[in-house]
Amino acid sequence: MTTAAGTEHAKIYIVDDDDSVRDSLEVFLGASGYDVRSFASPRDFLAVAGTIEFGCVLVDLQMPGMDGLELKNRLNQRNIDLPVVVVTGHGDVATAVAAMRAGAKDFIEKPFTDEAILAGIRIGLADRPKPSAVDQAKQAILDRLKNLSPREREVLDGMVAGHPNKVIAYNLSLSPRTVEIHRARVMDKMQARSLSELVRLAIAAGIATA
Image (cartoon, rainbow, N blue to C red):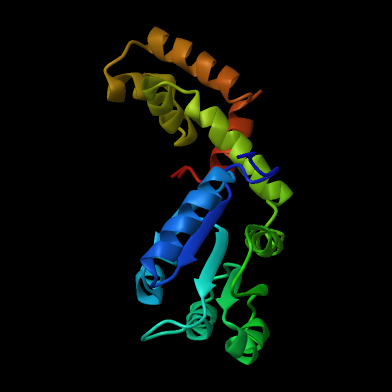
């Protein structure tokens, strides 16, 4: 099966009490290029909803104990902003509309086609939050940090804490000359032209400077 454009790493969370429906959707959506995770009940999903990555929630409207509308309302109460698409039977359209009024992005009527499922998911994922310029800048700094060796990171921590080379050398059981070499590599990898710029980068990345 051809992978749908733009689906790489996009998350889909299936919430349905029917094992066969979950299994078939997992296979189909996985083959379509999505990263799929399924849950047998709304309560199982709510238990992790606050910790998962952004993705589209595909939820059956009618389930025992808690239906799709109540699930959406509980997500709203917890300020968990995940796009929800509900799957409904013909007689549940009024409830599906109520779910949309609660913030669901779309509803899909049974029996549904593969194309209808993909179209609903595209609508849900269209609201994927775009990283701000500040977020992108911070990520760029974090990417530079990943290039530091463990020893270089220790030297960086000493530098942004305001310690002179001799103190860093003493704390790390290194010679001052070795610290100078590591310091030069840190400045190069972090693309910092001065200590003050390095400190600014560290603060932007969330590194404590005290």
